[in-house]
Image (cartoon, rainbow, N blue to C red; front, side, top):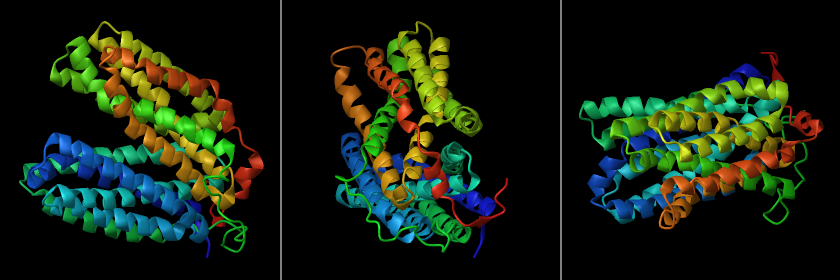
Length: 400
C-alpha cells in the first residue's frame, strides 16, 4: 500500500505534538500530585530521577524494536503506553506508588521519543530535504498547549485525576487515528532493506554515532541550564522581580520554538554542519553575554539568542544519526537521544554543586565551553549522501 508522504509528515507532526502535550500535562499537575501523595520537594526531586531513568530505558529498548518491526508498528504502541501511563501519577497515593508510576510513564515517554524520531528520519528521507527541526518545534507547541489547557481545567476546579484521565483517552484516540498514515519500513518490499543484519550493540555502535551522542549530551545539558537556572539567575544575580525573571525562560523557549520552524530552510541551503557549527557558536556567545550582563534587558536578550542558537542543533544530530545506517536508524537515534537525555538530567547535578564554589552566572561558562566544543567539531555531521537516499521509503505524492 502506498502512503502519501504528506500524510505521513502530518502524522509525525501529530505524534510530536502529542508527546509534548502529554509531558506538559504532567508538568502542569506536578504540584497537585505532590500534594495528593504528601511528599516533600526533596522526595519529589529524587522520584523525578525515576522518570528520567524510565525514559532512558525506554529509548534503549525501543530503538532495536523500531529497526526490527518498523516505526509504523512501534510508534502507535509507544504513544498508547505514554498516554495510558499519564494517568498513573494522578492515582498514586504515596512515594512508592508515585515512583512506580513515574518509572512507567518515563518508559512510555522515552519509547515514543525514539520511535517518532526514527519515523521522522524516514519521512525526511522521502522528502530528500531537511524537515526534522519543524517536528521538534511542534513538540514545543504541544507543551504550550498543555499549559493553556491545564490552566483552564485547574480554573474549572477539575482534579488532576479527572483531567489526566480525560487527556489520556483523548490522546489515545488521536494516536490511533494518526497511525494509519505512518510509513511502512523502508525498502522496495515494504520491509527492512536487509533483515539479516543484526542491530549494533553498545560495543559495536560506530564511533561516529557515539561522537554525535557526546555532542547531544553537551548541547542538551546546555539547554537544561536555561530550563533549570535562567529564572533563578535573573533573581539571584540581577535581583530581578519574580515576574520579570520569568521572562528569561519565556524568551529562551519562544526563541527556540521559532528557530526550529526556520531551521529546516536554513539547513536545506547551508547544510546541517553549518546549523550546528554556527548555532553552537551563537549559543556560546549568547550565554557569555547573559553570564556577564549587568542589566536585566540585556540578559533577557541573551537568553533569547541562546534559544535561537541551540534551536536547530539537536534535530540535526538526531537526523544525522538516523540517516547513518538505514538498518539501524532506531538504535542509532536511541544512542544519541539517550545520551542527550542524560545530559539534560546531569545539568542540575553538575551546576548545583558548582554554585558552592562560584556565583551561579559563572557556572554558565561550563555550557559555554560545551557549545564551543560542538561548534569546533560540527564536521562529524557530514554524511554520505547515499546513506540518506538508502533510507528512502515507498511513498506517493513525494513533492510538497
